Length: 336
Image (cartoon, rainbow, N blue to C red; front, side):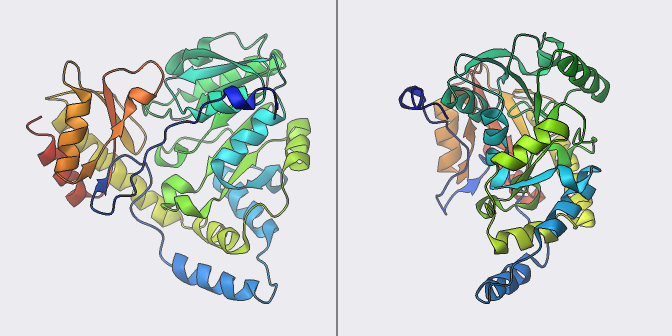
């Protein structure tokens, strides 16, 4: 991290509400968690008092199996954000340019600026058409947050090859990839993949993720990572969650069905972006965004003000939750 840059870097706004009286549509986490999580956590806490820790190698094996790569490429991290920070830290030096998608997750630009680099913004869905040369790093969010759109697999593979040819590392944030049914690029040479258990498994406070890379990038990630960054209980729960294939399949089916139902109904009022993620981006047009957010709160719902994302000025983002909860959302937005 560049000490000269820290004071000039602003914090990033995130979704989620801590108001217990509001149904939270502003955060993109699964409202359901896998069975057995509480028991696994409790057992791991008890074992921790005896200094009996879960195997980090087992976590690597199940994490690798989830994305079909070699376990040696897996670097456990304190959530997906640490994976992103590691990737930026080991590739970016003061004065470097980094190709960053927009609109997209604001932490990308922030991490670049903390390293003294300069974000060079490109349209999120068209970033794979840009020239990766002369950049220290390129970042892709797959699928993108907040638009929900994913890059076609062939285009992404072709772009990864162009990045390799330009000797420019490619960081792909796959935080929401589990919801798409698309293949991960984990293990592809020249690519660093950042993954998180927050979204699919509904456990944002657990802080478990991993970075995936091979070759020199993988070696540098392992060297730069913090040993023991994940607590033993979190590591045990992460290992458990990554083996819940039926949970992932059922969640994906539910999200896909509910997302399309919500999109179809809201398209009569708003411009709703096509999405492969567990959220939808709405352009509310000439409506007053502040007024819409306030009316939603009056009806017990928290929506995400998407104007905090670069290049968006009349947008809100809504998470896809359980069917009965989504019914409340549709009713609340039916007359705005």
